[in-house]
View (cartoon, rainbow, N blue to C red):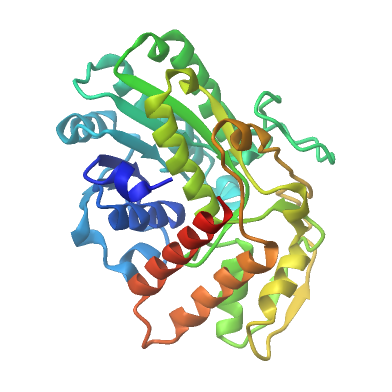
Amino acid sequence: MNFRKLYKNKKVLITGHTGFKGTWLTLWLIKCGAKIMGLSNDIPTKPSFFKMLKIKKKILDVNCDVRNINKLEKNILNFKPDYIFHFAAQALVKKSFLEPYNTWTTNSLGTINILEILRRNNFKNKITAIIITSDKSYKNLEKQKAYIETDTLGGSDPYSASKASAELGLKSYIDSFLKKKKDVLVGIARAGNVIGGGDWSDDRLIPDCIKSWSKKESVVIRNPKSTRPWQHVLEAINGYLIFGVKLKNDKKLDGEVFNFGPSDVLNHKVEDLVKKIEVFWRDIKWIIRPDKLKLESDLLKINSNKAKKKLNWKCILTFSETSEYVSKWYINYFNKNINMFDYSSGQISSYEKKLRSKN
C-alpha cells in the first residue's frame, strides 16, 4: 500500500504524538507528506524520542490534555482533520497502581471525549478515527488460547481495566450514535506488545535493559518466563495506517475491532528477547529477581487472523529481525555522530522495502 500517495496532503490529527508509538507514526506521516496536528499534554519520557528527532517544527504541535473536552473540541474543529489517530494514554501497568485516577480519567474519559466531539458536531469533510486501545483490554485467563476480537473484555489492574472500560464506551457510542452519522467512521485497534527504538518508558523490558547496559550495570529481569506477543512498533503502525485507509473507503468496516499482533511463532518469553538483544552489546549482565507483587500476567496471546483476512495485514519481521532493528537503533543513539531523525527515517524506509518484497 502506497502511504505516500494515500496520506499526502491529508490532515491527520494525532493525540499522544509525543509518546513512543505516536512519535513513530508522526515521523512516518511526515515522510508521506501529511499535514499533522499533534495533541499532547507533556513529554512523557527523558530522554524523549520526540525531542531528539526535532520534528516539532515540522507539524502543528499543540499542548492539550484529552481530558479537557473544550480545548480538545476547539482544536479538532479548527484543524478539520481527515484522520484522527488516538494514542493519548497513561500506558504503564505499574504506574497505574501509583496513579489510578490519572490512568482511569486519561484512558477512559479521554477516549469518550473524542467520541463525544465526533457525536455532537457535523463535519463537512468525513473524519476517519482510529482509536488505539490495547491487547490488555481482554479478560486474560492466562491460557494458551489466543484472544480474538469478540472475546470478553476485562482486566484487574487499573491500566487494563481502564482500557477495557474505554472500549465499552466506544462500543456504546458507535452503536448508539456514530454509525448513524455519514461524516464519521470509527475503528478500534488492539496491538500486541510493541518494541522498538525510541522507547524510554520506565518499567518496560527494552528500556530497562538499555538504560542499565549503557551504564555497564546489570539489568534486573522480573518475570523471565512471561510470554508476550512481541512485535516491532512499525508492524503495528503499518496496521493502523492500513486500517485508516481501508476504513475511509469501506463503510462495512465502521465500528470494527482488529487485533494487530504476531503469529504464535513470534510469541516469546521475556528471557528469549533479552538473549536476542544482548548479543549486540558488550560486557553486559542481567540478573533474575522475581516480581513478588505480580502486577502483570505471565501469558498473553492475541489472534490477528481477522486483520490478515480483511486488511491484508500481517507481521513481516522475524523475531531476529525485530531484535536487530531494536538493538541497532539504541546502539546508534549512543553514537553521538548519528542523526537520529535520519536513522529512524531510514528504519521506516528499510521496513517499507521489506513490505514491498513480501507483497
